[in-house]
Length: 253
Figure 1 (cartoon, one colour):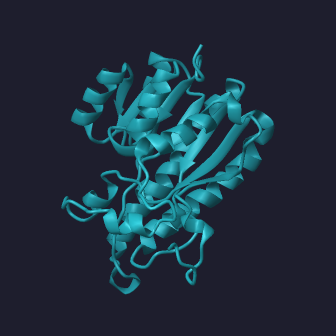
Figure 2: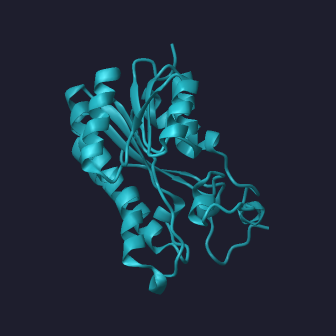
């Protein structure tokens, strides 16, 4: 018996990074996993590697959510775990942020999470319960300059999580948010046009003196997806190496 035996999990943005790490970990614990992404080639290859099912999903589109969940139900049955992981990043000062760029981030990070919860929650209720894990960020707890759109979206994910948790608690559905700090994924290089990014400087500013790795976040997601977290809902789970324990006047040494 694995920790997710009997679970059907749908994970967004799972062709790489944190989503892929969670998907791999879920299959290791006997979950039936639906990998979704807009990167079809990488997504199909990865899903085949771990024994999961791949579905194309642009999380910002309501019709694609409907189709993806319908396919998940057809292949494995109704999802009782949803990981809203898909996200994008955009750097720009407030006064230099174009509305199109702002809305692009909001549509994926915020609207995508909303649509995911709204689409899957009724199936979880009908099935007797489930767990929704929304991936926010430390930027959903505090701010960094040049991240207006991203920060707005991640604060929204944090807030929506709490509302959904309260509304769904009596129906057996738990909803929690996770707040990773600096994690070594492709998110930052993609936002910077594909150029390599040396995270050594960032790691030195973290109390644990390093950036995190996707498998470390996957362990937290696994806990929240499993029945081990049966008394956890509406909560914020931080994995940031200690960054948010400090304030601007403190020194990490």
